[in-house]
Image 1: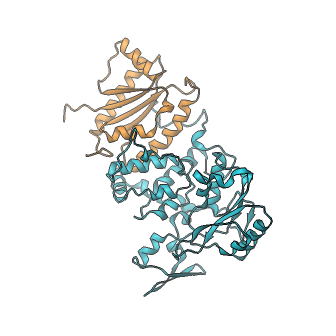
Image 2 (image 1 turned 90 degrees about the horizontal axis):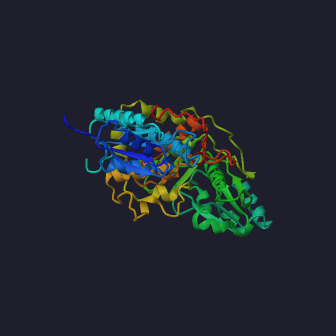
Image 3 (image 1 turned 90 degrees about the vertical axis):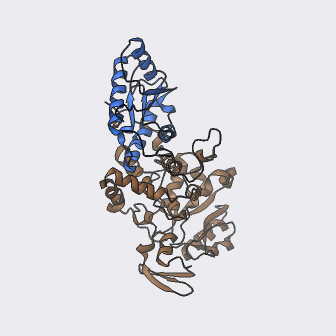
Length: 139
Length: 320
């Protein structure tokens, strides 16, 4: 268990957070190799069902990241997403699912450094929680 | 009841409406059945009492949209929650205000047959009569008098808006807004439990779900042409009663009706397993109210909460 590494799904918007990840990469900034990336056109594309499905399939944590408020390529996609997450997050916590399993952040295309910091933080948070048990199919 | 029938007769005789949707006595004493009245004589079949549980707003969605085609008007007898559903439909442009005549009914709460079944140990109730906050239930070999509150739907006990706010005609005595301080006590109590215990309770509730979808089918806010659980390509979630699939069904259904649920309790009353389905809905309703100051269906002019946003909203749940 000491060597256990969490599996984290990072759902990134193509215009900001994905470009932020790219910048972190080309700048050779180090961050834990725990994430698997899914690129979406906008954080507004993220259906809570995606998040549920990832947890059910065995991801230990999910991070959704989009453009900062006011920065959305489609003007209001991240605002709509924010309301959705504002409902999902307290609901999962209410049900007894560890709040740190599902996290949200805003990362711009220029924030390579911040991308690495966020990934490190999410990885550490999920490591503290240990492997996911709740909502995991067959667990 | 007399006033209701007279009004409906008047509306139909004067051709002000093509049809009126209400309830009539059914073969089951605890549940009145929805009825469609299209002639003045038919109005005598209408009843309104605590057995009129179904939310008649559902008839204005899906295929039933043809009801209000060609600018014709349809009347609907509505409790407070039913009128909130109709107000939601107006905000979502499912129905035009001009096409419906809302007949507000004096609701004092509706009976939850699941609660009655627990009291009578499953024996069938053949007749019931109400008087002064007491209900007498009669069956083949029993005769039981209980406080009405004991068998009212949990949604009614926590009801804040018993009257149809959006209405054209009101029958009987309105109750006004009932400030219900206990509305969220179940949520408060639940939140005080440690996370492990909350999770165990959730498992306890949803492991009993048989995935019959009665809750979804009876829900006035569930009117998608194809529900995500019925999709095969891609098939998002399993169709068996495996616990994680069941939970995800309920979580996502709750999020789909976030800011759209009017807490009419139709889901709970329809549930054959008697599950506490409103628990999650209420949690979301409170989040809606506290975060966005939004209460579903109390004002027909408000944009649905999940289709709206404010730039300066609180975002404490997002990493700083």
